[in-house]
Image (cartoon, rainbow, N blue to C red):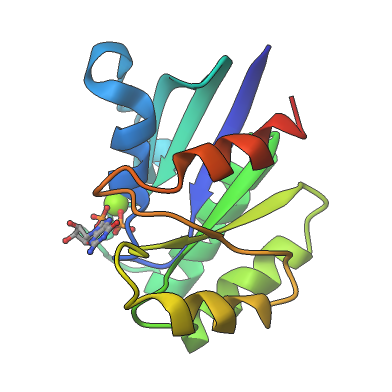
Length: 163
Ligand code: GDP
Ligand code: MG
């Protein structure tokens, strides 16, 4: 059973860190496709007994003519269409920003299942942000630390529902 996961959210919440955490060094396959898909990174990985196909959304360093928001929207929508489950990542230390709300709207307009991931939750500094994330109406946030590898058992349990 392979689950296709799109990792979406605004810049700097830790999407790529989560991608790398789930992909593992051994299994990472990076596919730099040209054109429309250049903002997305593809890989494979594993969590528990689940095989994963991962899509990281990223890379606005080379913003050109399109507005940043339009481009984020477009690549997020493309990733959502390609996945079974979207992992919507927020930064629990910052809380919910206006940009997070925009991403939440995009996700609500699609019918893909969404798992809300409150990252950077190591220690207790993320508690307020995790609580704030509830207000997005996208279900119970899963508190994780992609950097420190915490909360992955909870993430696995949430993913298992869709396998
Ligand atoms: P992206 O833009 O969403 O892909 O975010 P990145 O994965 O590039 O991470 C942005 C910043 O957040 C980097 O400085 C990471 O080291 C940091 N970061 C990522 N995950 C965590 C985490 O779990 N805890 C903390 N404290 N920092 C993190
Ligand atoms: Mg990134």
